[in-house]
Image 1: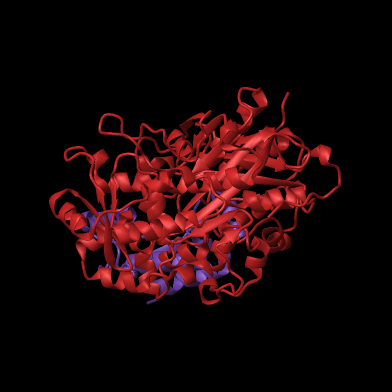
Image 2: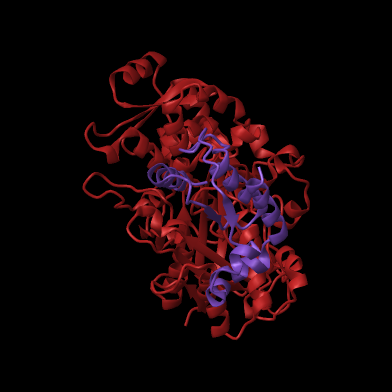
Length: 488
Length: 103
């Protein structure tokens, strides 16, 4: 039987301050009170501020979660002096580059850019070396300003802005189909473009070429389709096409925030079964969640930090003696009959899978739970999500007599980490840690980690159920005690 | 506080009056306890939801308060709240929520 391993993890962040206005919450609030637009614009971050924001640097691997935990709060007040747009696990791109990616991913001439901006965007994408996007870079062309003006005044769609100035237009594809309206298409295309960027990173720095990808699983929260099949998908193939995964097919996994964990477990299963050799799990950015908590941020006088589209790509393939392996004998699942009360949820997701393979809670070196950045959630009254989860896990360990009650704080600091992921639904679902985990497991700094994700199925009003999945990733037993450095 | 929850609280208060109504919170930390308590007493401090500018002045309690705990079935309480009781900063949460009943 083939043992599945995590062969690579890539991440990308696209800083898109002028797109924040099209997040779901800002769209509704600005329609209600246009005066808010000025306040929102004034609270947006510059590229330099977003780049040097420590949690963003953790996301692309330039700073470890441990180093982030040691930094003074608020993190936004202490930019990282050595911040770089390229990190060991991925990269950050600015808004001009994002518009280039959007145009490059556009197969239906939906995005119309001003010709000057298009030239800058093309140059910006070309500068992302190395990448797997170059075969499409010539698509990044624009139109003269007067043509853009004519289009914007005669068609349904959304203006695209840069530095407060209109520089493009997103067209509607159908005037009577809400699923093909400019707002939905922009959301979907942003998901595709950012997923393609993360996928490009994985295929440049990971061990396989695009042609070697057999199957793609997209786990983003977009819903691609028309009015007859809203949410039909498959963004997986759409993103794979952009980067030249010509031998792959694929599909989308829908499970709210826990979709990436479902996706990784399915990917590992497909590899273990021998059906596919290399499966890549991807997730693009969630445009709807831009600025989701901006009112709380304005009220608290902090910058609007939901100004990035996050994306990720994970390469799963046969174990190679170096990369960490999936323990499919200890997958945790929240069944339909399981209660959603926290103790029952953790019983299903953490204790049951550990018990199945004879492990204790303290045998897990690090838990990766929903890693929402608390600086984003606290001003909006949503609490510190990872901290609450880690304290609950620690309380569970107390109840099981694995640790003393006085050791709760130590459990949290040693086996947890601060949240550093943008609040983009599926993105924070434990998986932002996989880049760091892969490095630490290869280096023999850790032996075993567990990724735990939960999903709020009830938000869709089809069930009152919650969801959750978990898996253990551990150091390849055949690697022995020898540390393996991860190339950067 | 979630906008739907704010709408529900507001609707209940409008329909039934506030005389026989209390709010029982279950927030896991002091900060969010304060925000929720503020919302159902003085109004939504983020001015985002239906309770913005609506000072309902409802008596607000937290499930971790001893007076609340002793009124509940011990087994059920332990099953549903036991972990939170172990992990949360109970004293601070109780102090914060009590402050909203004394003002």
